[in-house]
Structure formats: structure tokens, C-alpha cells
Image 1 (cartoon, one colour):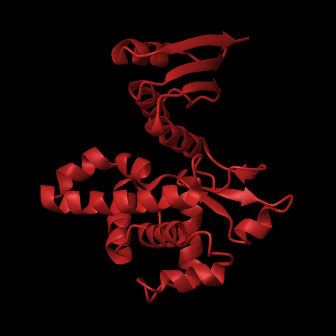
Image 2: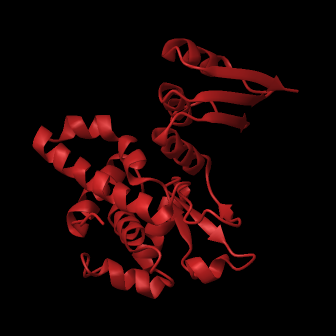
Length: 232
């Protein structure tokens, strides 16, 4: 188990979330670091808050809950819904975070411009350490369990982060059904490109109402594997 400096890691992600325009960045970072590092021992919000106060002594419940909602809205966490026995494993405070290093890379280039190389590397090391803990706790598929099933409330960004995490481990055959007006706009388009760059083979089934040209261009530019067809 990698030893994590929770305060330094919280500050690193607070800086990242602020840069990405995520609301309540301090509380969002506090929740994210607390939950990811202490899982699966966080069964209730009270226990989560107690864990958070190890390095954020003045944090109160209402702002911490607002930070949690920002994590869900921005795709950094998905919420576990409890139609069956999953609640016994996750407790009432059931969430699935995205891989910290994948999240970190979302704003990495801009962070390089804002900080000295030593400071940037120190913050990136914090993200790497939390990512190591994440992989130990949330398993091969990044969802905390490899048996049974989970019902989740999530955003498209959370799915993109999850697939990128899986593609980092080894090249994958990725199949996506894509719809929605923003499906081929950044930041999702950037993540499709990263999937291609990872060496994965990506097949995208496109809603016929959407212009697929951005993905075609991405495939040409990355010189990687991609197939697509339109759904009519």
C-alpha cells in the first residue's frame, strides 16, 4: 500500500478542479481524496466526514455534500443505486470514482503552464499515488467489484474516464454507441482520440442525426484503428 500525504493530495486536486472550473473545488477535492483513499471503509456520510477531517479539520457537511454533487455532475464520480445487495458492500455512501491519474491528465497541460516543474511534478506524484490506491481498491474494472452487477447513475464523462483507464492497462477492442449533440465535441472528442492513441481498436456506432466527421478526422490524424457506421 502506497502511503499518501492526504493534505498535499487534496491541495493538488483542489488546484486541478479549480482550473477545470468545477464548483466547490476545495470540498470536491476533500471528498474525492477521502473517499478514494478510505474505500471500502466509508459506509456512511458521517464516516466520510470523519475521514475528511483528518486533513481538513474545518470541513462541514453541507459544503462537503455540494462538493460531492460537483464530482457527479462533472463525471469524476458515479453514484451507485441500490436495487439489491450492493448496499451491503458499498454502504449508503456508495460512489465509484474515476481513476485519479486519468482525471489529473484532463488538466495536466494547463497545470504545467501555471506552476514550476518541481511543483508540477510534486502534484503529479500525488495523483499517481492516489491512482495506485484506486487500482488496489477498485479492482481491474475500476468499479469496486468483479462479480454480480451494479446499477449506476453516471455521466458521459465518467464513462470516458472509465474506458480510458481500461485502455491504459492494455489495448482493448472498444465499441461505443454514440448519440447526443455534444458527443463529438470536446472534452469527449479528446477522449476518443486518446483511446485511439492507446493502441485500442475503437468501433463507434453513430446516431444518424450526428455529423461523424470529427471522429473520421481523429482516426486519420492518430493513424490508429477505428471503424464507424451510422445508425439509421
